[in-house]
Amino acid sequence: MKREELIKKWLDNELSVQERDAFEKLEDYDTLVKLSNSMHYFKASHFDTDKEYEALKENLKYSKQRSINWITPLLKIASILVVLFGIYYYTTTLNTELKTIAGQKSEIVLPDSSEVVLNALSSVTYNKKDWKHHRDIHLDGEAYFKVAKGATFNVHTDNGIITVLGTEFTVKNRKEVFEVICYEGSVRVKHKQDTIVLTPGDHYTLSKDISLNTSKKISQKSPSWLLHESSFESIPLYIVIADFERQYGMVVSAETIDTNQLFTGSFTHKNINIALKAITIPLNITYAKTNEVITFK
Amino acid sequence: MKKDIHKNICEEILFSNFYKKYAKDLYTFLYYKFGEQLNPKDKVQEAFIKVWENCKKITPDKAKSYVFTVGHNLMLNEVKHQKIVLKFQKDKPKSHTNESPEFLMEESEYLQRLQKAISRLTEAQRVAFLLNRIEGKKHKEIAQMLDISTKAVEKRIYGALHKLRKEIEELKSI
Image (cartoon, rainbow over the protein chains, first blue to last red):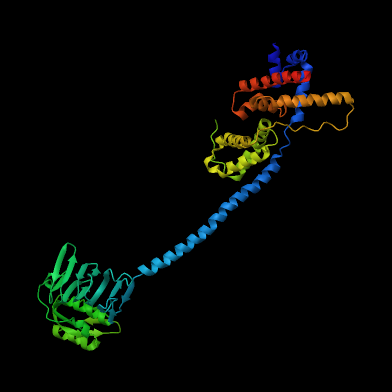
């Protein structure tokens, strides 16, 4: 075997027994072994892996901690900002809501001194802060509006939008009937695709009863309920009963009589007995009254 | 090739295993390449800290070459500022011995010549030779560590040996 080959094998500790003998017979064997054995004097200083790792670990923790130290105050600031913004947002967009219970009427003066009178069992919501720019009010129930002059005034109901500039009108947005009556100025009613402009005395009525949707003029100057009275002109009895229930907070049972018959007349909101007589006598029916239920016969 | 379950080595246990596997190799590599006075130990630590900081970007199979490259580059940056003087720390020769003073004298001179000769090797030769002779690493292990072929390792080591002997002879005649 060649000398070089042997030395290379020796360097890689791969010598077989025979090769080792051959290697030991090389004339420079002693020089090679001496050189090799002397190399340990140049050994790299000891590297204690475990100890060094412990030292490194502290540094790792340190750099980790430092980054956390930056993040925590930022998070604190951010959370304060979020809370402040939340409060600001909540208070500015908070809507004012007003409700009436059965038999109650309530008068509200809006920020621009427009007036709203709520009839029994009704509610309005509007935004005080934004009132200057958007005179938008949501109505559920029945209300009389006396609108001050100014920007467009919108009344939103589930049945449509009523738009006015400055006028007096009522909106009746009940289960059984949707009605807008104009008393002064002009009122635009938007219902689905329809847009109707009402002038004083006009009314826009939507109900299951086609008989109600007449274009008859209304002579009153303001709704009768403002004077604590409900008045009707050829109106089906069930509508009258629904109004009565709201004004007195009672339940009326009228299963044995025809509630589609028309009623003309009025009833007061102040005295239940007088009111009941006012309804029953003209229709030639009788009534029985218990604590909460009134039965028409 | 076995598939890695872990996408990166951000978990401390993985990192610690990785450190224990390669820290010493990196240290000896840097030490034999650049010598003691450039603080190879510090560079090893720095390189591993870099791995930890960037652990999300480093897949386990890339981590070894990453830490070696970083360690090497850290050293090179230092070299730019400082012309290297190779000086290997010697083990203290045994304090009490039966050898004759003449022999000790000769021995010490021999080591000095050897030291000079080692510092005259090329970096590549020196690293491979010292890893082989001092750390007792097989050619294959060195090849894996340096990402070169076993043949190249063999060539470097043999070349180094050849050169060392030549240098020692020359120095002797001065």
